[in-house]
Structure formats: C-alpha cells, structure tokens
Length: 291
Image (tube, rainbow, N blue to C red):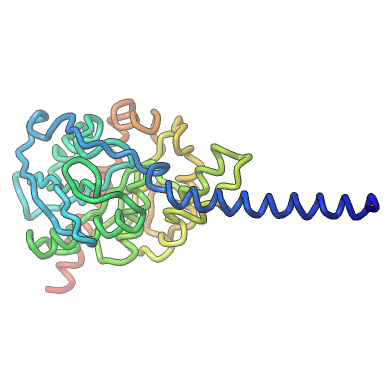
C-alpha cells in the first residue's frame, strides 16, 4: 500500500474519531446539563423572620406538575410596588446572602415575592432552562391573579442566572420595570470566557441568551454590576446593557459577585431607591393622564 493511501486512511480515521468524539461530548453535555448549570440545595439556611420580616410560604403551581414553594413578604402598604425576585443558580431562596438582600429591599418599602425554582429548597421537580422560565412566569401570574397586583406595580428583579430568567419574563409580559444584577449576554458566552480552549458555544448552543431578548424590553431597566465580579465579569453586564433599548441605567458598584450589596451598600441601594422613585413618578404621570 502506498504512503499516500496510508496517510489518507489515517486522516479519515482521525476525522471519524473527531466526529464521533464530538458527538459523544454533545450527548454527554445534554444528559448532564442540569448538573453543570444548576446547584440547588434542599436545606434552608435561614428565613425572613430571622431578619425581622413577616412572611408566608405560598405554593404556586408551575408547568410539568411542578409545585413551587415561594416566600410572600408584604410591606406595611401592599398597594405599593412589588418585586418578583429571581435568585441565582446555587443554594435556594433561603441562602443567607439572598435573605440579607431581601431584607434591604423590604426596608425600601417593597412587597416581595421570592421564587424558589423547581428543584430548589422545598419546590418539586428538576431545574432546566425552560423550567426556570416557566417558574418565573408562574410567580408573575400568581401576583396578578391571586394577589391582584396590577402589572404596572410589579418590578422583576433577577440576580446572576436569574437575570436571564428575568429578561425572558419581561420580554413576554407587561411590568413596571426590570432590575438585573450580575447579568450576562448568555451563559455560553461566560463559559467560553472561563474555558477558552473548550468550544463551549458549539457544545452547548446559546444557553440563557439574554442579549437576544432584552432588545424587546421597553420598560425602565436598571443594570447593577460589581466591578470586581470574577464569576460574571462586568464586561458581560455592560454588553447586555449596550444592546438594551432606552430607558436604561447602568450602576457600577464595588465588590464581587456575591458581596456588592454589602461592600458598597450605600451606592447599591441608593441606586435602587432612585430607580424606584423613577418608576413611581412614571406611574403617577400615567395615572394623571388617564384620569
């Protein structure tokens, strides 16, 4: 056999092995997607009452026969703004950092519905990208139908992976505003940054693609990002901000991915308070015009 034929067969063999190997990687990633993206915990670390908040647990039905166990934290005046809070991919809604943050939002006079996604905390099911989208929508519909909260009084707040969930929701439903903290263009973009030698986008597609949906959101938007965020570098939040239409505000704060609300609390919550004032002012203007 000639050298050329040998080389041709070796090359074909390598191509076949590469294709088969790549196909195997895709199958493996698809099978393990939930374990790679989501890190839910069942144990509840703390609760709102330990931070001086009165709250109730509410069960909300979602898709796939899932039942969500969420927290309803009313303020002294339930006719004011509500926040639908969507947490990150680790722990559950009872993670101490989340509850500390909720207590500060509550001090701003906000009513809160904190959603625990499927598979997190006491919620049933297993987390998936579509499942998280469905759970956020279920929380929103609960506020509308069961608590009778008008859409123009609901602000959707998403943190980390919850930012993409929030963007998806507000691109589909009316709301008063959108707040995203530690946001990104897509999870695949972030993964590619952390693992530059692995074809993350080819393997996984474009997961949690917030940049494709934020363009359709016309309500006021607040983007909060910590300059020292190593989990989701601030450049990803800026890129998402850049493709979003007006009205929008970018708030850069000190701290890391999980610490900004404590490290730079005055600027962090001052920025949120200013955003709330703008929302309330806008709502009053609309009410005056329609009367």
